[in-house]
Image (cartoon, rainbow, N blue to C red):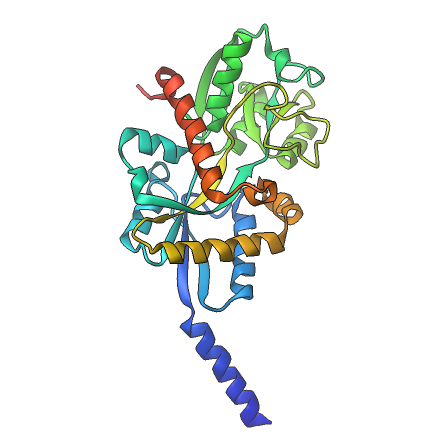
Length: 305
């Protein structure tokens, strides 16, 4: 019996050590809202198969380009997470789109458009008549900035955009003194800040579908605004063989299906496109094209001086 147990442990040990490590490099810090879902999906991917051992590594900084560049250094066993900032790097020539291929997508962040002006019953249309809104977000030309510019164009107000370390930091200031008028953040964080400042309002969901915790809040699309969402997509360097890219994508997709949409939304408010039957490549192209179009449209407002 002892010999059998020893043999089994040896087999498990060999299997664990023989699994090839695939690092997924994130441009965020560990406390990013999407990290919780990523950990759940990676754990499930490692449980379902033994050929690869997926790990999540955090490489913040460099306007989200460090993670991609470090992936490029070892393209056979590294992947990288991209967000809307990636599109700006493509436009500026810092990155070449032909060098990268989408593998799998965590999808869109289902965040709420939070303001301290307007009327929840009327949604974003209630912003008509405002002269200027101070908008907080993490960088020029990001989803929050582009959304605000679209709203300002449609409803006739000026946008003054202020970069913060995080969207949550902007929300904290909005709740504290009202000097920020608009931010995109999680519904759970809105509920937390609403207790501190009852004047906060939910005007729209920045998400393909309404949020289960805010079913009466219409999406931006329902209100006639085609705005980009905060997306997270995992890419590979094109030098990684297509067969491996496909294999890794299928493993992550199956793990995502097993974890389930409800658990992913509960932990991170992300919505993977596979639950809307949207293939990763199509989702990647669609997301990038929209951000690229809006960056070009609002070029003068989204570039730093």
